[in-house]
Amino acid sequence: MLEVGDLEVFALTDVVGRLPIPLRQTFPTVPEADWPVYRDLYPDTFWGPEGFQQGRLGPTVIRGRGRTILVDTGIGPGASALARRFGITGELPARLEDAGVPPESIDMVFLTHLHPDHVGSNVRSESPEPFFPNARYVTHEVEWRYWSELAAADPDAAEHVVTSVRPLADLGVLDLVTGGDAVAAGITTLETFGHTPGHTSLVVEADGKRLLVLGDALAHPLQVASPRHHSAMDQDPERASATREMLVPLMTDERTITSAYHFPAPGLGHVADENGRRVWRPLELARA
Figure 1 (cartoon, rainbow, N blue to C red):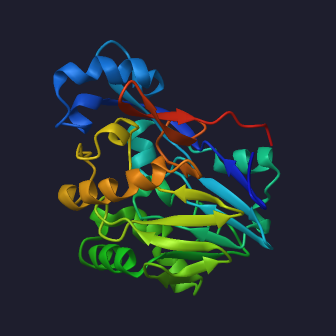
Figure 2: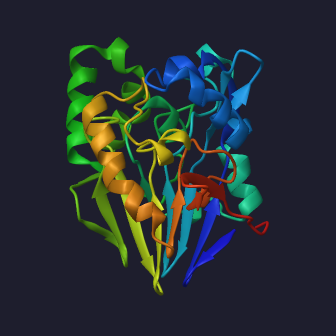
């Protein structure tokens, strides 16, 4: 747990999965000569001599000012197509229990975007009821419009939306926001489009400190040094790169702490300058 001003921030790890995808394939614009540098800097993102990808899924909880906000809900209990594909099961309920954050205490679930590894624990697997019974679920209106239209036109291509997001709209617990909206006291939305059409981050201001909750706006710490290196998962690579170029100066500000969903545990950290290169450095956190 980390204190940011008057707020408690819990960096959770839903799962760490070893994916049969070489990082060279995920980040195709990285020169071959740079990979040894990134392996040395960020060894927890690699596995095996071939440089396959080891990925963390990291929801964040922000608690204080009378609110408990969960940002993203992981890959889910294993029934989703993505979880079955990679043979992994999310552990978000157990990690919330470890942190002392019962599901019924959460009053907002903010979804940075609607990729399947961010919405998996939205609803209960046995029935289309919200897993967080007292929460309003929130996402950007552009993101919802894109995925809901895709789910209507091609349900198989958006199975995760059909099973894990559309039920929230049907139950009347899904709220839509735009950029710059205040979702709670001192917490505003920041449009970080590109990874998906309506990808949105949160900016938290607390007692002179700033917390950026980025979702997948940056997918790997190598993008701190080179924001133009896009991920193969970015739906609009040029826009995603422009978004990162906007974000990195904010991350470099000494008063800023950043939460990045796929960065190595704990996923909370800051940007430092080492030997003329911007690098990501994680924070040492107290146990909740």
